[in-house]
Length: 193
Image (cartoon, rainbow, N blue to C red; front, side):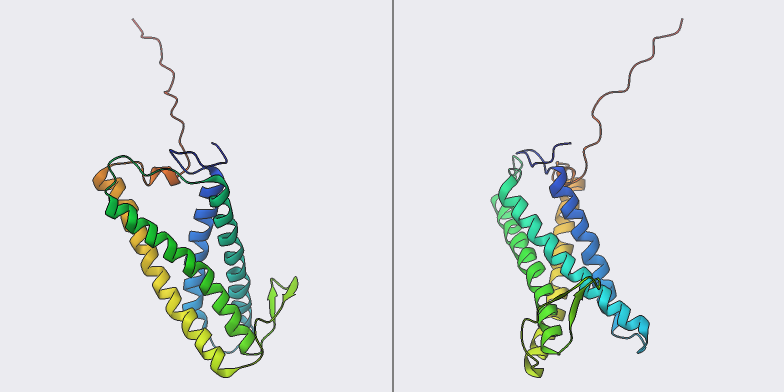
């Protein structure tokens, strides 16, 4: 498999970043929704710390994915794709990228405005984005929460479109983001008499 994208399909780097981001979004959304109701114990502190560290990891992966896409290009639209679908895909992708930057940054801002230190897996501290400010913290918290729900809606739309193309249109839209399986036919056995 090629590392770089081709006009026909996404390369290995894009696929690895795409599916890593998908897994992180799922885990972060689940943990974000469940950690707020945890009892005030060391486990809750650990859950918040891991959520923050993985959120920062997501931010870095999204930046890498966008940089790689600018460097390596992207596959061309499949023949026969209606222009309205191409435009909707473009808007959906732009919205997901915007939210994938806004959500971690709003979480970082919420953390900073709440007066908490921010560490990445306990290895190093990150600077505060703002001083302690209750109003700013509340705004960042709402932006973070609503952003997650909007992102999940766009991800669902994106996944539904990929499945539509795979099941109904039977084109290569979904397969272009999956690792290529060997296309070499199995060797034939000689016919027995």
